[in-house]
Image 1 (cartoon, rainbow, N blue to C red):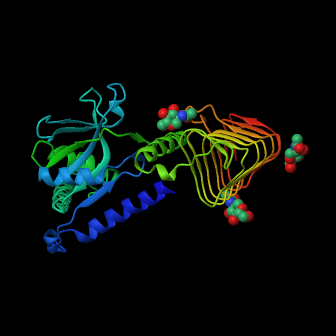
Image 2 (image 1 turned 90 degrees about the vertical axis):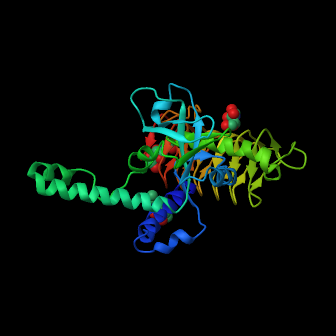
Amino acid sequence: ATAWVLLVSTLLFWVIIRELLPSKYPYVFFLQAHIVLLNCDVCSSFPLPDMLEAHKKYGGMGTLLVNKVSAESANQFGELVADPETNELLHYTEKPETFVSDLINCGVYIFTPKILIAIEDVLKQKKDRANLRRVSSFEALQSATKAIPADYVRLDQDILSPLAGKKELYTYQTLDFWEQIKTPGMSLRCSGLYLSQFRHTSPHLLASGDGKKGATIVGDVYIHPSAKVHLTAKIGPNVSISANARIGAGARLISCIILDDVEIMENAVVIHSIVGWKSTVGKWSRVQGEGDHNAKLGITILGEAVDVEDEVVVTNSIVLPNKTLNASVQDEIIL
Ligand SMILES: *[C@@H]1O[C@H](CO)[C@@H](O)[C@H](O)[C@H]1NC(C)=O
Ligand SMILES: *[C@@H]1O[C@H](CO)[C@@H](O)[C@H](O)[C@H]1NC(C)=O
Ligand SMILES: *[C@@H]1O[C@H](CO)[C@@H](O)[C@H](O)[C@H]1NC(C)=O
């Protein structure tokens, strides 16, 4: 759901940008505004206030959040070189074939409205080039129709790379967690990272209990106030339980996300899994994954309103909405 909100807001951002292009509304530059742009498939502590402060100090057009990763994994991202003194972005390449740097672009940006001029300049250059091609060669026209449309601006190739080393872009390095959400399993890992962040920033949100007044809690666990968890259940670490969920007596939950209106019945076990809205897990059933966050079927995911009957074991599987499972399954996608 968060990913969708971010996706929609990113699209909205581009729509707003198109509408606000400086030629239409020159006064946008008198606003003391900053534009925050976030990729929708990353998880991070998003240190926006600190980034904004740094951005104002640098005085450039944009500030990128950057992170150090291992040299082997760096080529999956936008690699960059920054001046260690001034933090200026000196060089930027998207997914390079040869190793450039272990500093990578996190997909979190703060821009001043001047970025709109840069976008418009790129658009103008592209249109000019497209027109030139159209009159000069029939062949070029043919390939141009297949190529990316002329009114398409890519942030990496068209804005970041050309502006690097021009005292317009600066970097802010995060020392907190940052991950890309490339597989469904990564959302479990990210959930764990956010819960461990809560331990430092908002510990009152985390559950506690020793089985006397409330369920036994191990490690970082979030339980929505409207959820009902039986005293004899054992929960954690890395568990998030959403609104109106009911967790029965003797249930055991480890590293999982339980969404709204889910019912986990007596003595059921859920490990390395995401249980979709309104699903039920029957008595003595197990819903589990190996916990390999990079594998396609490294965790188990139950879609909305899935009914796992009593004594059924579901392992490393993805189950689409509205299914009833009356027999055990392993390493399967149930359509
Ligand atoms: C819980 O999450 C933290 C942070 O991602 C991780 O270091 C730890 O290994 C996780 N524990 C389990 C049991 O998954
Ligand atoms: C699941 O069932 C509900 C209610 O019958 C229906 O509204 C929904 O469209 C179904 N979802 C899918 C994916 O079939
Ligand atoms: C599971 O359900 C299917 C279809 O509803 C039925 O044919 C099958 O006999 C059931 N299997 C078991 C073990 O109950």
